[in-house]
Length: 91
Image (cartoon, rainbow, N blue to C red; front, side):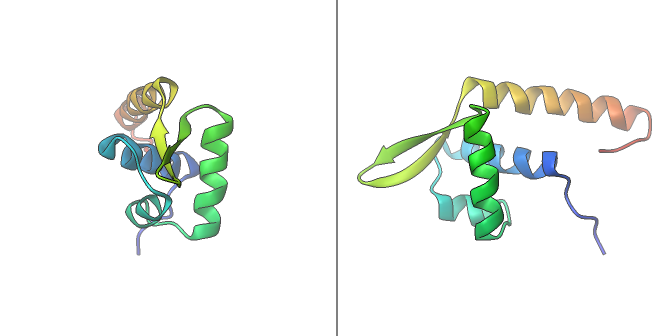
């Protein structure tokens, strides 16, 4: 049985879904990041409050777009993950 994802890994998964598509609809994020609707809403709110993502109106529908701060978070997380694994302590 696989281990549960950490909160940081879930955030990274959401950010990558949005980054890889330029913009993402909530349903797309829900499926690609493998989240429940309730958890997705909580994480999206957290990411918006910390200015890692922003909403974009697309013909009356809400889409999410990653910000420069969100892109930087992904970069820095990769560095931390590599550092941690180098010492045999995966996150």
